[in-house]
Length: 273
Image (cartoon, rainbow, N blue to C red; front, side, top):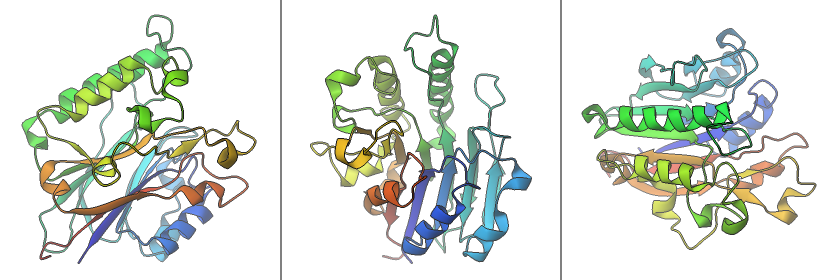
């Protein structure tokens, strides 16, 4: 059977569970990775996901902030999480997905720190945290254990390419598109682990893409000052089985109180296709 996976920074899963269920009804993906769930584990709307067909869940929550989760139609095993920079924020959860008779797929839902407003680690501890997080991520995912059967996704809080922002020149000094951040993400992508950006594999550079639009814009669609902050990457063996990717832009307008991010989906052919 074909397989699909989505990632979405939902910016409070309890506040926007109706939007999530609407998405899952229209786009019944096999696995959904969430970031910024903003609730503790026992507050996660587990029963609502189960009733929607996603009984398998890996949740790493935090009161009022951050928090990540994976919900799945298929069994999840080897559930774990990792702290970065010796800071106990809940920014990572992983699980192995039993995908039919295919080889198991390790899925990581990641929420990289936003980094604050000032792109200077000497005066901004949030930006220092972000750069340190990226360094640890590069070291960890550079390990031999991550050479195959891996997928990482989430809100990376970096728009790495000039086609991933509405204005390359105007955002060069804005956190999320500064050269030090984009270089750090490029080094992670280009490392010896062989990650492939699945969205840009199927929607190549030359076309501007966004997955986030600020709440500050009175008319986000008209101004269209977006950034592609949400990503799905995989190792080469998994990437070879992809059949497409899409960003669900309309979801930004599904509600008067939407998330400022929209879902991103990758599609894969089945093991015998």
